[in-house]
Image: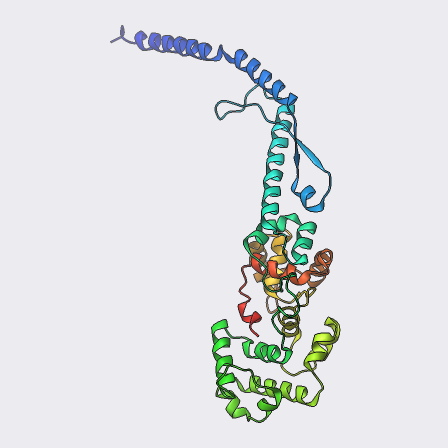
Length: 346
């Protein structure tokens, strides 16, 4: 029993010596690898290729980024021979690769026949290229269309449709509007103000309108019949003048008027800071984590109307996108994944 004790100790020492020899044999070629790495790095530095950045493409600047290829490495661990200069070279290569990809994305996403507002957005913020390439902005007529080819605009019908669509789904708004028109004709022609005033409120409500909405539409029809409001007036007036006049109409708030300006009159510089979808999209565009913002606001805004961003901050950040903030709004809705179909119906 006593004689057997030393043997494990001898085996351990022998195993340790073998292990040390194996490690030494594996580590021996290391200087050779280091030399090869330095050689490859030296050759790479000799070939510097200019790469135009995405910003240079959009803003037509002559900015050039020179890309350097990092030395190839074997394995997952960082080579001991890698110097800070090698790390800087790798970072420059990564930046150049990203910028080259962005350039391709922008050049393929923007065709020649687009609304000038889209080109303006890209010139101001190339980061919008991704959402623009995925969502065509069809809220505004193509610049190649002549006035005769563009869809006619009927402000009275658009305002009535906006009242019908308030606080209901897209499907419900379509159904109510169809029944409303059917009260007057069967050829899908929207009734004139005088025709609406010839029908009493209970009959208007049979189309699915609430009492208040029936009153709002009847009151709006009266203002058009009296000449206080006209289609020509709304088409010709400035955004500010239209807003001032329509806010006096019962049933039309600021948001409803702004949606009318954007979707019906096709005004290009409307920016509804009170719209939650636009607030959310603006916060995303500014790099905020909107999920954390909303979670943090639950306890601090008890009893108050919560916003993703303040109105002053939104106006300040949007200033650079003038005079195409309507187009910006369209893509902010896309970023926020907001359904705007019900607002587009005339």
